[in-house]
Amino acid sequence: MTRLDIDNPFEAPVYHEEVVGSTMDVSKLLAEGNAPHGTVVCADFQEAGKCRVPGRVWETGVRDSLLFTVLLRFPGVREIPVALSLRTGLAVALGVEDFVPSLAGLIEIKWPNDIMLPVLAEGGVCRKTAGVLVEAEGGIVRVGVGMNVLRREFPPDLRDRATSVALASGVEIGEGQRFAILERILRRFHAELETPGMAGDWRDRMEARLYMKGEKATFAEGRADSAVEFEGVILGLEDDGRLLVAREGIAGPCSLVAGEQITVRRGPGRTGG
Image (cartoon, rainbow, N blue to C red; front, side):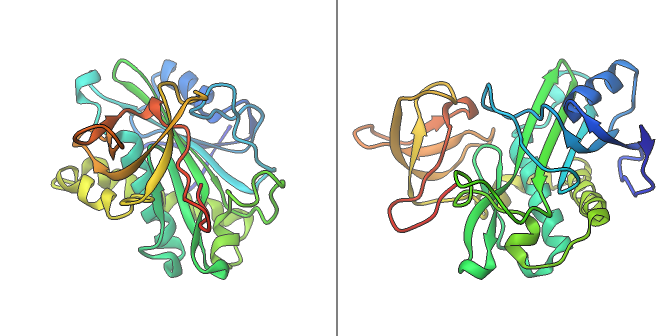
């Protein structure tokens, strides 16, 4: 494991491995070795990248993605910032826009943990380019991000749902520039967590980017991998990050926790994620 010479505003090491099982697992080992708050581990390839839905893995090529985990330490569970997955997604969106100014203000966040980039060559239709996974043990939190950066081709079952930073923006990006994107994301992530005042308005800033707000979407009932689905109109977010949905036949908005959603789909004629 080598240490990258990039700026980390958490003032902690940024480590790099060529191949790992998952950066989440490496981060857990670093935590057990008393690595400090803000320590980052990234990799060129994951053999068993983790996803929120049980049984799925984050599949990538070698050195075509940005795969990293940030280790955070808090005094206890109560001190962990609310809606951390969404706020991470917000930092990722802003960091990518800092790197690719043509995407400024256009990246959306699909509740609860996906980052959707507009494919500029296709009229701005949004497709998934990154996912966030948060794992906590007491006050020790691991925040993992997997992002398609350089990938130009996707298998048939993903072509209408996935994209990469390079493919969406049309910008030529080199392998080494993945770490320039990481640097910008860390800057934004640190600001989201540490800058006074930003914690108070995260919901407004997040709702401005909320994928399909005001539109009818399809959700899973109960577990994220449930086969039972229902439809509802996305209204916005609760202060704790729960999604507010207007469901037909039920008076008042319903609040959904992260485990209750497997997918959000746009209706006929529009591309969803």
